[in-house]
Length: 266
Ligand SMILES: [Fe+2]
Image 1 (cartoon, rainbow, N blue to C red):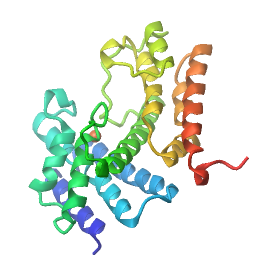
Image 2 (tube, rainbow, N blue to C red):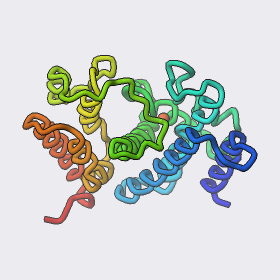
Image 3 (cartoon, rainbow, N blue to C red):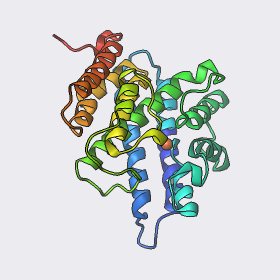
Image 4 (spheres, rainbow, N blue to C red):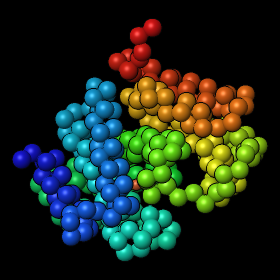
C-alpha cells in the first residue's frame, strides 16, 4: 500500500471509533466525513492544474486535505458542536492528533512537520507570518481547497439542501442588507461576523474570500464552477452587488492567468 492509502486507512480507522452499532456516523459527522472527501477531491484538481508541484508536494497536499479536519469527530463527540469557541481550535487539535494517533509514521520528518503546520493554520484568519517558508505552499493549498469546498457547501445549503448540519447561522433572513457591510466587501476587506445583521450580509462577506485564494488553478476552479456567480444569484438585485461579483471575477481571472496552462482559450 502506498503512503496515501495507508494514511487513508488510518483515517478511516479513526473515524470508525465514532460510528454507531450499524456502522453509521451521526448525521453531523457524516457531513464532516463528506467534506473531507470533497477537500481531497478539490486538492487533486488544483494539483493537476499546477505543473509546478512535485510528486512529493502532491503527497503532502493530499495528506493535509485528509487530516485537516480530523479533530472534528472528537469535537462533536465531546462537545456536540463544531464551534471552536465553545470547544477547541480544531486546526490546532487536528495537528496534534497527527502525532497522537501516530499517523503517517514513515513520512520523512520534514514532510511530516509540513503537514502538521499546514493543518494547524488551515482555519486561522490569515497564515501566521512565522510559518516556515517551506511549509507555505501546503498551507496555501489546504486553505484554498477548504474554502472552495465550503463555498460549494454554502451554495448547496442556500439552494435548499438543508441536510448539512455544519452550517449554523444565527442571523435573521430579512430582506435587504447592511450598506456598511457592502462597502467593506466592495473595498476588498474582510467582513467580521459580529458586524453582520442578516443572512444577506453573510453572503456579501463571502466575496472577500476571492482575495484569499492562492493558486491559479484554484481561481480557475472557482471561475469554472462560477462559485461567486452562484452566491450573487442568492442576493437581491443591485448594481453595487453586481460590481462586487465583477471585482471578484476580475481578481480571480487575473490570478488564473498568471499560469498559462490555466488560462482559458479565447
Ligand atoms: Fe476546518
